[in-house]
Image 1 (tube, one colour):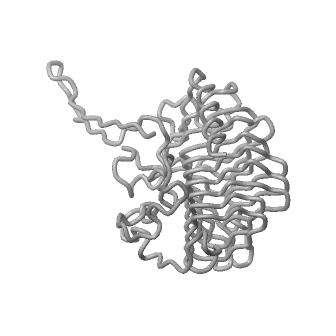
Image 2 (tube, one colour; image 1 turned 30 degrees about the vertical axis):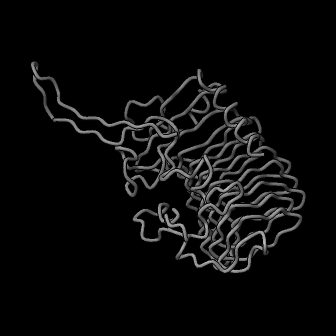
Image 3 (cartoon, one colour; image 1 turned 90 degrees about the vertical axis):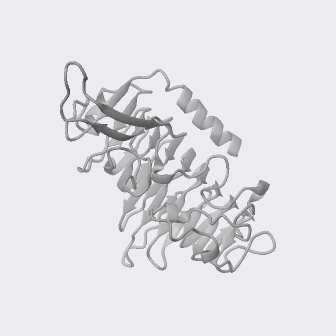
Length: 335
C-alpha cells in the first residue's frame, strides 16, 4: 500500500507539471487574484494556485475541479530557514467536492474543517487549528485519500466531543502517515472509523483515543489515550500504557525518553531523541524509526511545501546608477 500511495502522488504531480500557475494574495501584492473562490473559478483543471501568507484569513470555498493548492507552511517564525515572510496562509473551512478528484492541498493553515467528498485526494503538510469541530472528515464511499505530514490539532471542548479525524462508512484505501495528530480534550478521539472503512495508519504521533477497524496499524507512537481495534494488523507501535498488545508492540514507555520536548518549536518537540536507548529508534517495521520523522518520507518541520522557498531577503532602501541596488537573497528547496 505504501507503493500505491507513492504512485498516486507521483501521478498527480507529473500530470500537473505543465499546468497554469497563479498567485493568490488577499492583501494585494500584484497577485493574480485576491481570494481563493475567484481563483478557482478562473483556473482550469490541473492548474496550481499559490496561496500566499498574509495576516488576514482567507474565506472558505468549495473545490469542484482538479487543482493543486500550495501555501507557504506554518510555524514559520519558530523553525529556522523557512520563509522570509513568516505569515501563514490561513484558510477557513472548505470542501473538496465532487469533481475535485486528483487535487492536492499542501502548506495551508486550516482554521476549521476539510470535508472530503471525492476520491484520489492528497492532503499533505498542512496545519489544522480547529475548536469544537472535526479537522478532516472523509465522507462515505470515498477511496484513495492520502493524509501525510500534517500537524492536526483539535481543541474540541467537552460539550461537543468531535474526533480530530472522522472516516465515514465504507471509506477505503485511506493512508494516514507521518502526521502529528492531537486532541486536547481529555476523553477526545484522534481517529474514529465507521463500519466498512479501511486504512493504513503508520508513523504518526497520536495524543488521545483511537477507534479503528480493518486497518494496518504500525510504527505509531501513542502519547496518551486508549484504543479500540477491530480486525486490525497491529505491529511495532509504542504506547505510554497498554494501548497496543504484546509481544508485537511496546507498552508503558516513558515518553520523556522518546521526544525532544525542549526543542523550541511546536512541531519540532516531537522529533526523537538521538540516543540508542530511545525505544522508538529503529523499532518500526523494516528497522525505521517510529513516529512521523521515520521512513523516507518524514514529516517536514513547518510543513514547507516541496517548492523553492526564499528564507532570507535583505536589500538597501536606495541604490545608485553605478552600484545598483545591493540585495541579498537566500533560497532553498524543500523535498
